Each structure stands twice: as C-alpha cells, then as structure tokens.
Length: 215
Ligand SMILES: [Zn+2]
Image 1 (cartoon, rainbow, N blue to C red):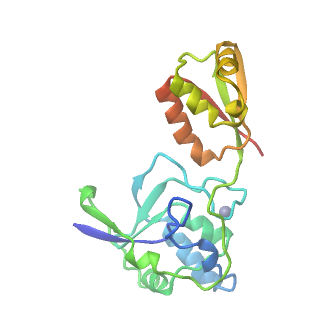
Image 2 (cartoon, helix red, strand yellow; image 1 turned 180 degrees about the vertical axis):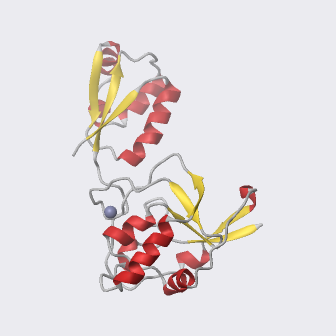
C-alpha cells in the first residue's frame, strides 16, 4: 500500500473544507523557483484521469484546467495546479518546494488500487493571504435540447423543469414543446464542468442535450 499526500485540490461548494487558492497567492515569489516548481508539476507521472474537467477557482478565461492527476511517488495533485502557479501566481507550501528542490520523486508502478490519497496535510495548509476565490464555477455556456424528445415521462418533465426555459411551463405546455421539431435553448447559464453530469442524466432519461460555449 502506498499513501500519497494530496496537494493543490481546491475548495468548492462540494468540498468547502479544502484550501482556497486565493490564500496562496504570492506574486513576489522568486521567478526561478516558481518556474522550477511549475515544470516539476507538469512533468510528473500521470496517475489517473477523471471524466469531468476541473474549473479555475478564479473564473479566468481558461475555464477548464484539466482532468488528470499527477504524482511524484510522494504527492498527488490535479493537472490544473500548474495553471494556478503560472497564471495566478500561487506559491505552494515550503515543505513541497523543498521536496522539489531535493528532487525526491520516484516512479509509481501498478497496482494502483493500493494507493491511498491522504488529505490530512493538505487540508491544514492555510496559505498567507486573506483573499477568497469562488466556490462555484462561472456560467459560461448554453444548454440546448434536441427535439422531438424520444422519451417523455414524469422524470423527463421533472428534470427539464430544473432548467430556465421549462421552469414556469405547465405540463401541457412542456409536452407540446417536447413533441415539436428542432432544438431549443433551455438554459443560458451552464458551467461546462456541470455539463457532463447533466448530459449523463439526460441520456439515462432518453433525451439529448448539447452544450454551446459562449464567449
Ligand atoms: Zn485561472
């Protein structure tokens, strides 16, 4: 069994106990050291890939910051961590920087199922600022429903009511729309990282939705 220390997993509405990246900003951090840590984070071993993509807690233009996790045999971090260092000038805890300087990495081989992610060290990192980032992703896309809906059920109607277009429609009106032809815009405010779940849920219900990114 191998235990890996979690690093750079940021808080969100679902995981409010995780550290806030805004607390780690340090734009005076030595440039050479920053570049060295950045390169280290980018060049490690890929451990796993997750289906969804992570979003930037600062809601910058780069909405999706990656979906794989990296490891150096001792720490494990999300792909997006290097983005925070590069674009938002985050400095990581000194313990990790020293570890990078000492270049203590080792290669992990299978079986990966014997790996444990330990979050104890990471959730106790407080950073050095008072600032706060966002808990929820920015709204950045449109959700379109393909018509006519192949499947119509109470569940489908209930699911669709959670989107703006259907929220105030009666069941009769909803049924009429579902039998019509074409494509309708059902929400203008969907974060891309939520789309995967919505798409999956819709597919299970037998309906099809598309995402259109809005700049
Ligand atoms: Zn960003």
